[in-house]
Image 1 (spheres, rainbow, N blue to C red):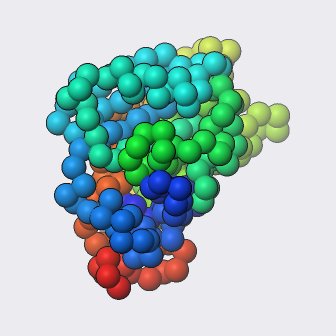
Image 2: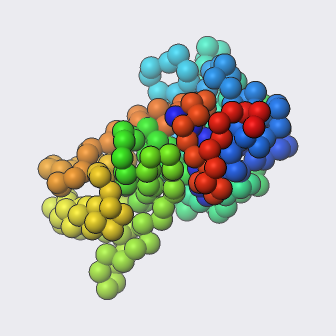
Length: 275
């Protein structure tokens, strides 16, 4: 599966060159970047940055490295953690998921629950490897996807979302949708909402939202993931329970070289890297 073409949600960087993933890294990038996307790229380091924790996993490892994040967590702090990893955590490519909007040049705004410095940071130079950057919900969505049309909802510090349909992956901002006259999806389903309204009302809110999403997006199923998904007692009809570790699978899939995915912005199929 070609998971490196993501509409409005991914960026691939190598050196000082930044290529929007939605433009098709393999079809349109330089020969150096094409080689970086090859299945023989080597070890991939996947980094899933959340509002309270960061988790990392490299090719060949089974136990993630975890550390706390928060309002003072910056890209330089992230690099400090990476440098502390054991030598056998070497990598030749990086997938980075962050809790915020991602555009053609990387993060488009500073993540609300983290420190500053994410916008404009030279990730490829800092990691000394090509880096693909996506929204953290996209990372989990890619790892959770099975088939058909899927909506992913990440229930964490905030509420993340993405849609995967056949060969397309689209980051969403469903957290801004109105839940009622005064509150948004995020107000009710985020971590503060869970604490404010309690588990019972929080679960009822999920029971109410899932059928709406299924109908609105004509989805086959909704995956409920993120750290707070463990508080769900009974899944609504049409929902599946995700797992945070699926973010790592999504991160590895981003470097996959199967040619089945369609470029979302051009509707063209990238059949080979030398098209």
